[in-house]
Amino acid sequence: MQLITFSLLFSAIPLALAQYDYGSSGSTTTSAAASAQTSSAGPNHIVKVSNAAGDLTFSPNDFTAAVGDTVEFHFYGPKHSVAQSTFASPCNPANANAFFSGPITTSGTGVNPEIFTLNVTSTSAIWFYCAVPSHCEAGMAGVINAPTDGSKTLAMYQEAAKNASTVAPTKVQGLVQGSLSSSTSSSTSSASASASPTKNAGVEARGGVRWTALGLTGVVAAGFGGLII
Image 1 (cartoon, rainbow, N blue to C red):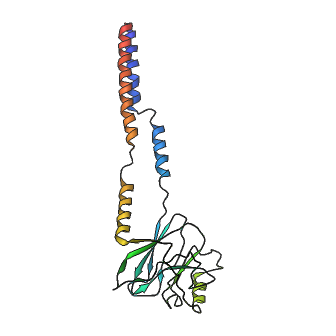
Image 2 (image 1 turned 90 degrees about the vertical axis):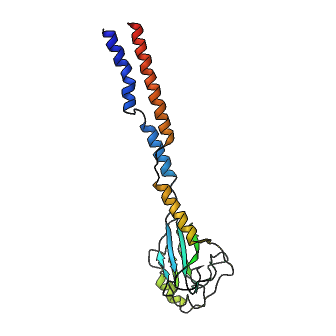
């Protein structure tokens, strides 16, 4: 009688372990770590080049961005551009490799479907201006990651720009050209992907195998107990 009781208890142990999913925490931790490593893209900053009222402004015109972030320029009418400059030479190209969108003409008061995106690869200050004649002199300029010590500010740049003469870069370069529709579609797709369940199919499969194996172990144990009796 004692042998029968011992056999039944022994056969129940694997089923109890399976019920509490014993030993599965390691797989869950690994899966979570892998998911964290796949997320590396930074946020996207949208800058309005002018606006529906036709103001000679960038909005925002002074902000910070980290390496890996993107800056998306949205154009309003009638005609504007965005070009890279330096603090020392307002309204002039930074160098031969300065980014430049080229002049973008927009009719009406709405936003142009054409956009240009800057990939941020450094935390150094990035000064930019509108290269349409007289726009930069009127204050249409901006900066990304201005020095925090106040030695070089956007207000200083704009003040110096009043006495400058706008020079446009010689070629369109350094920015990724796209459209508002594709940008919206991409953002929607990314949001949908991040909202989907993250349950790991491999873990589920291993869980099913574990249940089967433990169940078979219990049957073998019960049979072994019967032979002893």
